[in-house]
Length: 224
Image (cartoon, rainbow, N blue to C red; front, side, top):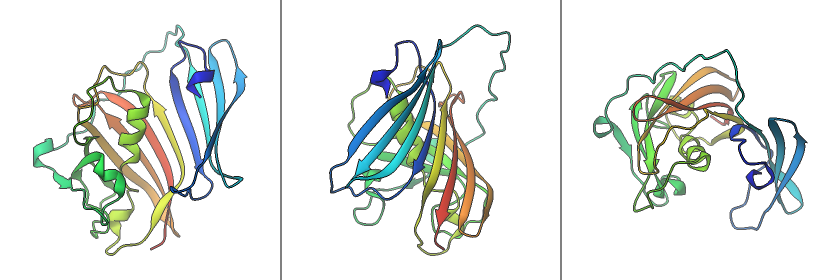
């Protein structure tokens, strides 16, 4: 998408629908289409196609800044225990999701998945794991940091049951804070409603100093 958008139009939001499962051991085709290009905003549509079937649809909105009399700063991030005081989710081959090999998470709010914790909130700290290059953080990094967290309804379960995202909308606060890829970011999700196998959750990501970076909303499915 980015390659088809004029310079000076940062990514404002992505609306993602997970149409079907993506097989990791098969090739997939990625398509990007310009829906509309206005004076300040570009609307994009992306598709992931596998075996001739659309498995994911992404609508992206890119917008240049414009002058406005409205200026409402975001509220500061929530209080969170320091990283070293939070429970780590270790990478255990064959037990934890494979992507946790690359992303470190520390729980400071709520419980781990399948722990029987009935809190409406879940969150903590997240960053890349291991010896990765230190580079400026981009929207691609933020997508990984937010997507790493499981659906906030899973801690309510007392035993394993599958769950996944049905839809996901993420909005990026622009201009992005000057962060690098080694820094911990703070995440918190809240269940707004859950029943009949579906949950509706809102979340946010903040910088280490509490500056808002991204807003996220998911409709999730859970089979338990």
